[in-house]
Image 1 (cartoon, rainbow, N blue to C red):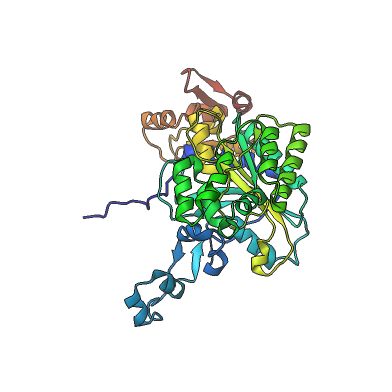
Image 2: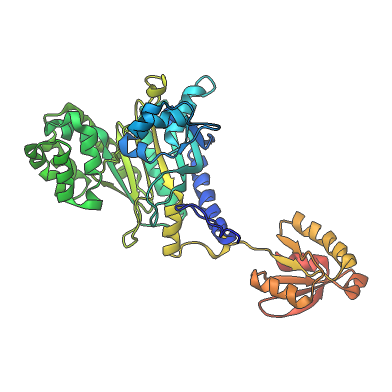
Length: 456
């Protein structure tokens, strides 16, 4: 009995309509990337494990797909390790490569490896799939595309300002009005950790805080307690959980909370710079919002942190995110190179556009006309016209087989092809074509020039 075909959980096949819609999103994002001066690069789908491991925190490391070494990969594992059943010790021996978890760390590796070829500041964009061994759910897959734009080689906060504008430009071009660009600063989180006496537990603190909108205040506090953050320190955090109001009023309260932290005050200054610039420049359809609980539990952010949420009423996680990373390339031996970047979650953006019915009708651009096949002579006559029509920019097909006309017409209807052309002995003798409108049912004998003008 034949095996029933299937695909791994968290992956998908895409039909022609879905591919067309995805390409529509890709095209708009790419167009805006290039308007803002970003250049394309691509990196391999898998990297050396040492490139990826340790860059995303413990939770991220657990979600990296490891690739088994080829050949007898168990031969180098000592019997004592088998007995210990410690996967953390065995994995580096049997797996030297891993699928990329995101595009940022591979980009940092790329910059270091190609530093002598790059003109800094370097603005790059990259649109490729990434893989995470996460539990699949709506909007969260194991294989998905990221569309990233990063700048390395500049510490200027004008880069952050431009990235906010880039988010706004892309979502406006997609017709996705009302998105919220949330912003925070890692220095503020460091300052808060310092103020509550938990500087040595910054990662634990930020990972827990980042879950506030998912698990709620009480569970976040419990997780902090479990990680060794003191009860008194958590009590000093209380103003954060109730912080509200506009950008300016939240900044005012933060200044009071972080008055004793130089790092925290620096983070506030950076946020004020970005907010003041955006207030002057304005945004088209998005809004910028301060969210001091935004942590994005990744080890490499050092300054601004971004996360974009869909318009109100759409039940979806973040559709974009990013931030400043001052020392990411330092991990690979290239010191003092600052970077900042943002990412667009293509798959989630797709779901939001679908839910809000924002894909244009023209996105599923189909065949303009199908030529009916009545035999070899008629097919050759048709293909001469088809060649001219394709050169004119039309999408044209010849039905491959001289099947019954009803079958060919049904094929055109099922594919929503608006016109068919019929060519028989009579049309060939007149150097003409019979054009049928599949929507109205009207048909008429036309010349090639008339056929072109009708399709135009």
